[in-house]
Each structure stands twice: as C-alpha cells, then as structure tokens.
Image (cartoon, rainbow, N blue to C red; front, side, top):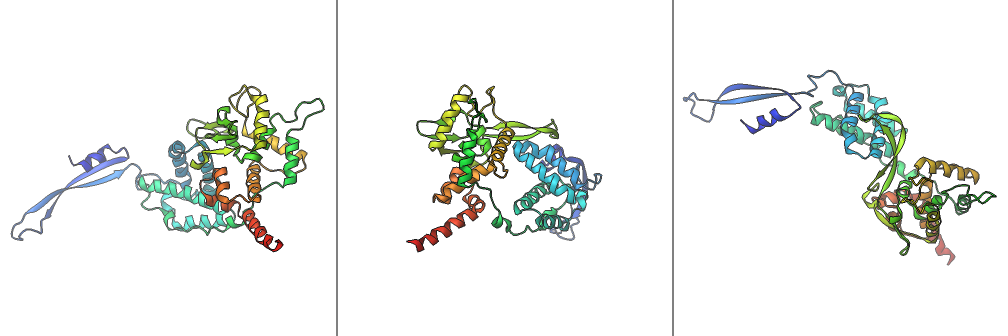
Length: 373
C-alpha cells in the first residue's frame, strides 16, 4: 500500500478516506495507441474539517486550545497570563464570532481597540495568543487560512513613556528602619522584615528570593546563586479550569535563561542573611515561616504594604524594590549591561527600555557636570 495512504489511515484526525479509480489518456504516447493510464484518486475528510463540524465560536475554540494543549506546554505562571489575556482581551471583543467566519478585519479591529486602551506589551501578547490559536486551527484543518496573518501591530511607542516606581534615598532609610523595628518588649514588629532590605540590596525577584535555600549562599565569597523560582499561580482542577484561590509552586528554573546567575552580596545583604539565619537557620529555606515552610508571596506583599503605610509612603508592590535597586546602581554610574546581568534580564534592551528615563537623567547629569569643572 502507498505510504501516504497508510499514514492517512493511521492519522487519528482523519474521519473518512474515499479512493476512486480513474482512467486518463496518456498524451505522451502516439494518439493512434488508445492507451489509458490508471491511477487512484484519494479524497480525505478530516474529523476537524470545518465543513463537517457544527459551527464553533472563537471563544469555545480558544478555550479548547488553551486547556487541552497549551496548559501542558507552558509553566503554570505563563499559562495563568495567557488565560488572562484570552479571557480579558480577546474573548470580550471577538469571542462570539464563529471561527470559520473570523476575518482579518475582525482581528485588526480588535488590535486597534486594544491599542487605544492598553500598552504595546498587552496588545502584543493578545495578538500572539490569538495568532497561536489560529495557527493551530489551520494545522488541524478547522480553517483554511489564518486571519491574523494580514494584521498590523501598532508601533512600539508606549514603552518610551513607561514609568517605574522607585523609592528615594530618604524613603529607603525609612523603610529599612521600619523593617527591623521592635516593640517596647523587644519583640520584632515584622518577623521577616529583613527580606525587604535584602531585596533592596540584591535586586532579586520576590520569587527568586523565596526559592533561596541556605545551600545557595556562599558567605565566604559573599555571593549567592539564583537557580530556582517560586511562583504564585491559580489553583486548577484536572482539566485545567480555575477552581478559585492561589497556590505556591517551586520551579527548578528561573524566569529566563539568563535569570540563572551569581549575585554578589554587599555588606547590608550579608548582615541581613546573618540575622535571618538566627531565626530560620534550622529550615532549608532562607526565608521561611515559623514551621520551616516556604513563605507565601502574598504574605510578603501584605507586610511590605503595611511597612509603607507606617512610613507614610504611597502604597506599592514589592517589585518596586527591584526597580529601586537598579535605580541606585545607575545613580552610582554602573553601566546598563552590568545592571542587566545583575537583574537577570534576558536582553540588555529590556533593561534599557524599562529604565530609559533613569538612564536619560543620568546622561543629562553627566553632561551638565562638565560645566562645573
């Protein structure tokens, strides 16, 4: 049997194969010789053929693609973000359109509306999510062409105006003092307040800090290794659906490939670790609960917002500590490549785009300094 036909028979997506025998005059021969060439015509009908299926809305197909396929490819935190993009950006705008009736105009209209309201990054993620789903639909014969192919993303303009929250040196001093404040009886107000000072002096992501084990710390050489990450993700049932609430998961890899790195420890960071070791030394985790378990992201975030409130500083998430670390390095004249390596960014361009205002301010200050010589 022809191998192409054999492969079709073994394809689980094939619903029906029709083989027809046809005779065609072989025109290469002498016309007086009425010889016909015999061949087989194979017609294939796929299970997912749009012509044989009931109408499917984009919303339903997108969810099918997410929960049956992408859920098994992505890290839990990445899947949470892709699901959020699908449900908040794509489905409300074009989810009710039938998959086979979706046009490039529909996709472009969605992109244009998102561009008027959201950042370039959000628009790009929505496009990538939809495009991936539609490519899958083409591959599985649900549609004959990808409507996202003819669309145009907006120019990346909004990154130039993106601001990041950084604390001033005065605010940093207030935060550090509050982190280690004690009650009159000597008990600590915040049991693990040092983690805030640690983040200010290392620039680690909160998930990287919570994943640290004492074996990752080299006190003699004053450095630590970032090799793991802890993420807070949605709780899900076996079919991938969100059941409500969140759970903490450890990943034996960092957010990016370059996220796996060695970070030097300055004096303040070392003092923090020594102080924490007197509290959590019996646990394998550097930052642990009283019972020795890993601390939850949300508990650290709540503690930090309480610290800011006590300091009468505007509320912010812990990621602002990472931005402050970078800002303080730039203020000391550290180049963008070195800052990027310390932060574990996948590309130097990400560091530059994120901190462009800070970098430009330092450049202006450097040029103005020439007039003071």
